[in-house]
Image 1 (cartoon, rainbow, N blue to C red):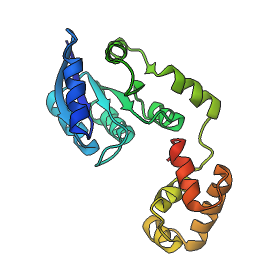
Image 2 (cartoon, rainbow, N blue to C red):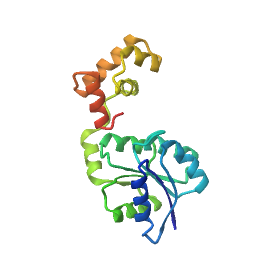
Image 3 (cartoon, rainbow, N blue to C red):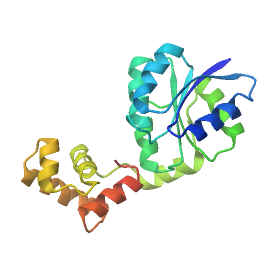
Image 4 (cartoon, helix red, strand yellow):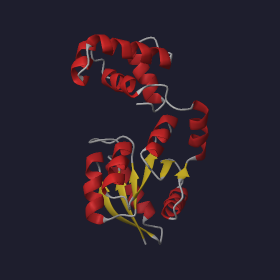
Length: 201
C-alpha cells in the first residue's frame, strides 16, 4: 500500500482528491493539510511515501514545502500538483528535488500512475509542461532580481523594498531596472506579473 499525504488549501479539492485516490486498491491517503508550513509536521507524524503538494498555499508554497520535506523526511517523495502549468515552476520544483510535477486537470488514473512511477524511483513530469520548459529555458533573473520583484508585486515603493530586503534604494533601483529589461516589461509591476506568469518568482 502506498501512503499518500495531500497538501491543498481548498478543502473541496482536497476532499475530491482523497476520494478519487482511495478508489485505487494500492493507494491510501494517510494525512491532509491545508498549509505549506504544515507539510513537514504531518509527514513526520504519518510517514507517507508520497506527498502531493499544491503550488499556492498559505504558509509557504508547494516548492518550498518540497524543499523542507526533502531535508526533514527524505524518504517521502514530493509530487507538485498544480493548476499553474508554468515552466518556471517546473524548473524550480526539479531544483528542490521534487519527484514529479503534474497538473490538476489530469485524469485521476494518470495521477495514480504517476504516484506509482514515483514510488518506483522514476521522475514524472507533465509532457506539455516539460516541452514548454525546454522552449523557454532557465530564468534570466538573478536571485536578487527575483527577490526585488517579489517585494514589488504588491506595488511597494523603492523605499519599502529597500527596507524589507536590507538594501540601499539605489541598489533596489538597479535590480528593478535590470529585471524590467530582462522581462521585456515597461514597469516594475508589469515585470513582476510577467515573471510570476512564467514561474520565475
